[in-house]
Every structure is written in C-alpha cells, then in structure tokens.
Length: 219
Length: 126
Image 1 (tube, rainbow over the protein chains, first blue to last red):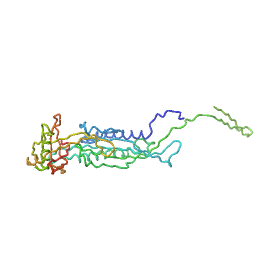
Image 2: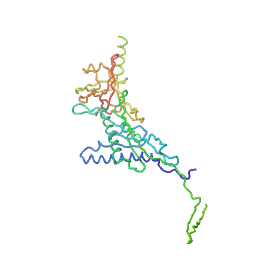
Image 3: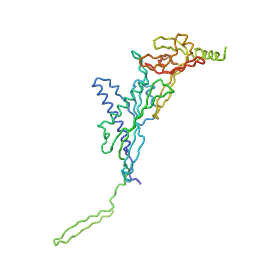
Image 4: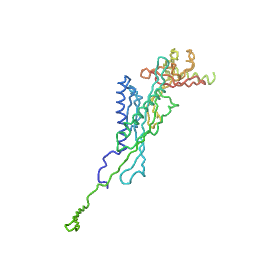
C-alpha cells in the first residue's frame, strides 16, 4: 500500500493555475501600461477564469463590463513512454483550452453604425492577441516554472463562425486557443527504509598485511 | 373573399389587436430617421447559445412581426438588415411587459408575401 497521503497538486493542475495567474497579472500590468501611454485601460481588460462550465451570464445580465471573458481549462494529457521511466517520472504533454468570448453590441455612430457582429469578432480577436502574446512572450518561456515545464507552445487557434440561424440580441463570438505544455509528472514512491547497514574498515598493518574489519547492523 | 384574403384578415386581427390579441405598440424608424408608430407582435426571450466552444452563453433572442400592409400604408418600404456600417440601420423600439423601453436594430427581415407579414430579427442597439 502507498504509505503516505496523496495531498499534492499534480503538475498539470499547477500549470493550469499558473497560466491563469500569468494572464491575470499581465492584464493588470497591460492596463497600467495603457494608462501610462494615455490610452483607455479598459481596452486591455480580460476577465480570467479557470475550469468554469456554467453558462456565462455576464453578457446577458451584467452588461456594465463588456470586456472579453477568458476561461482556462485543462483538457488532455498524453504520456511519452519512450522518454519516461515506469517507476517515477512520466514525460507529459498537456493541452489546455483557453476559450475567449467577445461581446459586441450594435451602436449608433455619427455617420452610420458600428455592427455588433463585427464588434464581437474584433473583441475576441483582441483577446486572443493578448493571450497569445502574453503566454508566448520570452518572459514566460517556461511559464515561470523552470525545472517543471520543458516547453510551451500555441498549438492552434480556432475562431468559431457566428451563428447563422438564430440571430442574437447580443453578438457573441467564441474562440479557442489550444496551448500545449511539455512537463513531467511524478508518481508516489516507496519511502526507503534502512533494513541493514554494513560498515567496512580497511587497515594496513605495519608489516603490510591488509586487515578488514566489518560490522553488520540488521533491523 | 378568398381563403388567402381571409387568412390575411385573421393575421391582422391577431397582430393588430391590442385588446384581446397580441398587438403591441412598436416604433419603426427607417435609415433616413423617419419614424412611424405601428402595432404588431413583439418577442424578447432569453436563450442559451453555444458559440461552439462547448460551453453555453446566456443569450437573448428578440423579434417583431408586423403586418406588411401597415408598413406600406405608412409610406415605408419593407425593413431589412443593413450590413453597411456607413449607413444607419432600421431601428425598432418597444416596451417590455413591465413598461421598460428597449431599442433594437433590425439585423434580418423575413417577409411573408403570401399572407402579408414580416418578421424581423433584432439586435440591441445603443
């Protein structure tokens, strides 16, 4: 039996949370930089979540904040047998879905109008731009987890086409950035116990004879 | 009166009757800024949508249905969605059942020239 409580996070959980922390902290940083540059910091705002599956209500009922929503979800891990060992360490490629949702509303302009479908698509594109640039910046080559993370890579970006049949009052465009991370997982090990000690002392006598003294302690 | 004309009469009775039917006051504004007060059917409901990420987003679906004869009688052409961002859209305004005002733009119109009704799908317009 395993002799200790498995009371730790696996590395995929640590990386999932780290991705969210990096995004959240960098969004704050980007907003400050935007303010310093005399631009509207709200244009750089993202709302970061992890592993949420309830429908997003904000776009329907809380329209004060229209900034994009980003949800980080762990979705898949595959294990490379050739680069692992069967006892302790498994080389792992984890896939994290980083879903972005852009929200747009048609609005009146001095000449013409700003269509909501275009507004939502541009907002989700900007969210994807921020997420990809942050996670692929050289500051986060190892996601601040050097020694644990070996590589990170944006595997794909898919922006879903707006729905055609049921036109919504609010325009919402969803997108998915699939983020791949190479790392190692480890598994519980047997706690080693000393079952026997052997002490050997080798001496050379004055006449050149080699003398070996041994001592055995068994538990 | 043909059966088809009878159907149109029934439709108008349903859409325009504010006493015992579904009639509801609607303000229709064309891209030139001209408005007309009409009566028709309004629909505004919440709906869950999936933007194909596998996770649902709470959405909202709104539409109006108007008798085409009312639109033509007001000197308007059939409303339609305006894709060109350089032009003003067709705009409709109506109250919900609790008297709150809402403003929408028409994003798609589906005229039924058989019995004379037009259904317009709406987007929030600010």
